[in-house]
Length: 202
Image 1 (spheres, one colour):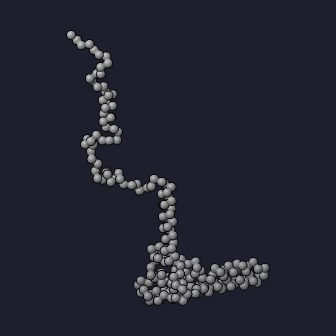
Image 2: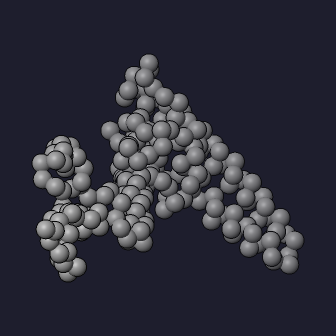
Image 3: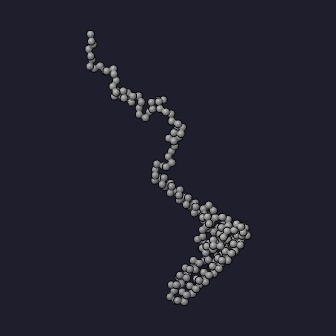
């Protein structure tokens, strides 16, 4: 005799939705199902733990980059003023150029007063007296010729001294370099003078 069917009884067959719900409860999202997942290699673990080279705060990174760049420029400027070879242009490097700079800086050069004299002559041109203006121009030309003669003597003297100190074969051409430095005001020279007046290099 057939048993009566109870409408409230649960079906022994599990539906697809019930199966998915049971699996999701047993293995929450984000957690592997045990040994079924491959073990990450050491390189992968180190890459995951490594901090990024660029900070998350881009404004902070930009400020740090600007500060570092400013520090580098200041160090180069101080090094160049002090005459450190690694901060100097190629034409300024070497013991011979340092010798020339020290010799020029120890000497009283006529050409270094060129700018003040030119400024004085410009002021004289504002005088209404034509004779004052004419004498000022003539004085400027005379001073210019004396400065040229002084630089010429300086160039020959330094050429002889450089050859005597470093040898004829290794001696560089220093006349133009010496003349250009001698025509500058002492306070405006770069690298800055490292010797006092009269303290000639040996």
